[in-house]
Length: 246
Image (cartoon, rainbow, N blue to C red):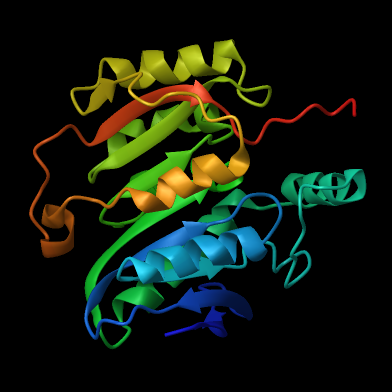
């Protein structure tokens, strides 16, 4: 089945858009895809489509709708980067999490969804994936090169379900000091397993491709708890980085 734009209802009132990609299978688990600062653009939609091709319902909620609905930027021009940062600075994180939870609840009540729904996010969405793990009942969360997680480490005690964080060693938006805070706060947690298992990715497309070609274990689809630790830190290079001087 193909993807489609749908409308969701916000917990605090109002309606906002989302992109929904559905699998061929009649019954499948779901994934909430949490955007970068560029909106629900072609990249996020492609990720959702790829997840649907792997037999998941995938939904990408428009988290910037309160500022400007339907934002679809690229990372190819300075003007788009400037607009993306404006939207990022104006973003209400708490309301964004409410919207992500609304998307999660929508998936769970869809005909054909097993009720098992995870979350995956990139950059801004990488932090939101962490917050989904601490504030929602998402069945699992994966964050890629999340920015600002060090500012929400006080919520780590609320972790209940599996969380996988890919933390880049070379990241201009997450300096070594911030990475050290994350490791200090999560490293001694019995749910955390530090790891350097993933090599550096040098392009955004390669990192995203890796994120959608590795399937979660069958136990997650069926509801059984995985035997591995729920939180893992992987280190590499942030594919979101680029030379801003060019």
